[in-house]
Length: 583
Image (tube, rainbow, N blue to C red; front, side, top):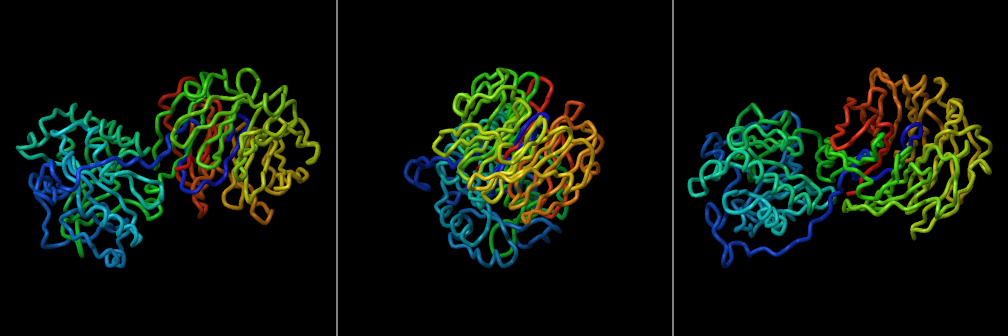
C-alpha cells in the first residue's frame, strides 16, 4: 500500500483483517491453562447445582417472557442458530439442527470462577463437526471475583478463540443477579460494573485479539451499566427478547448482532437469529480485518478494521523506532506478518514487521541492504509467495528489489532497463497475482503498467489509458490483486475525479468506471487499496483532511463509503496504505 501520490497494494489474504496503517492487532489462539474439573473437589456448585445456571434465567425471573411450552416464530431474514448448556444432552442431534437451517451454535463453557461444564467439549466439538460455526460463552457472576480472573477461567475452560473460520469470539453472559450474589447488579455501581466488563474484555482480548460478544438485556444494561456508551462501540450485542419484535436496544448500541428470540426452540436449546448473512457470520468467525497505515504531518499511525469497526490508531514509530517525517509508505502481508516499508525524513527507505501477535520489529535501513537511491519520492510493496517486493521512484525512475524469505535483500535494479523508458516517474503502485508482480508508474499524468514474471523477466510498459480509456491527467493511483485480477483506482483532474478499472486474468481491461456515485464529491489527496477475503477495499485521504473507506464485493457492488475514525492519530493525514491482516 502506498501513501500520497503513490498507492500500493497487497496480495489477497484469505480470512484476514483489514487495517489502515493505522493498524490493529491480529487474533491468536489463547494458551490453555488448567481449570478445576467440572464440579470437582473444591469447586462451588453453579447457580442451579451441577448443571450451572441456564442462559436467560435471570432475564425470565426479573423481566418475564419465555415459554418453554412453545416456540416463537423465527424472525424474517438473518441466519438461524442455537445455544446449549449442561441442561441439554451431551449428544445433541446437530445433524437435525443443521438440516432444519441452523448454522451456528453457542455452547456454555464456564460460570463465574467455580464451574466448568462437563458437556462443553462434546457439544462444542460435535457442533463444529456438523458444520455449525461455533462459539463458547461464560456466565458472569461479577460479585465473586474480578473480571480478569473470570476471563482467565473462561479461556482455560474452553473459551479461547482460534482463527479457523469456524469459531466465533467468546460471549459474556450478563444478566440479573440473585440476592445471594449481591442483588440485581451484584452489589456494583454502574461505573464499577462497566469497569468489571472492560477488565474481563481486556484479559480476553490480550489472549485472543478479539472483543467478547456481550449477551445482555436492555433493562439490565441500562440499570447496571448505565450510560456508558463506549463499551458498545467495540462489542457485538446478543440480546434476549422473547417477543415478535426486538424492541429498544441497550444504551450505546444502534444494531444487534444476535437475537435470542425464544427459549423453547425445536430439537434443543434456545434459538437465536444472527442479524446478517452467512458470509457476515463467517467473517465474524474468521476475524477478517483490514489494516490501514496513515501518515500525517506528525507521524505514522496504524489501525485496523475488525468486523466492520475501526480500532484506535497506534503510533508506529513508538513501537518500531523513529524515522522522522514519513513521506510515503507501503504495506503487505507475508505469511502471518505484515511488512511495512516507509520513506523517512532522512530520504531513505526503512523496513519493519508487524508480527501476527501485534508486536513490531525495529525499523531497519533498506538502502543499507539493497543499495543507495537518491531523490526518493515514493515506495510501494507487494508480496509474491514468501518474498516481499519493493518498488521505489527515485530521480524519475522506478527501481525494484526483493526481500527474500531468509531476510536477505537483492540489490535495487532499474526497471526501465527491461521494461523500457517510462518518462519522469513520480510515483509507483504494486500488486501480485499468480506469482507475478504488477507495477504501475505515474509519469507526467500517464499511468503505465508492466509485469515481472516469476523468472524475473519484465514486460514492456503499456499505457493503461489505452486499454481502460482516457480520463485525463492522473494525480495518484493505487492497485491490488484480487484473485487473478488486478484492480486499479486513479484520481484525475487534480484529485477531483476518481475512477476504477480491472485488468482481468486474460490480460484484457475493463473500461474505467466513475466512482462519483460511490465516493461522492471530494478531492483525493491519496488513495490506497488492498484485497481482503476476496474483496477490493479502497481508502482515500481527502482534501478536507478525512480518510474514507469503501468495499467492492465479489459481485461488483460497492458498500456505502464511510469515514475512518482517526482516534489516536495526531496531525493532518497526507497518505494512506491498506493491507490485509492475517488471523
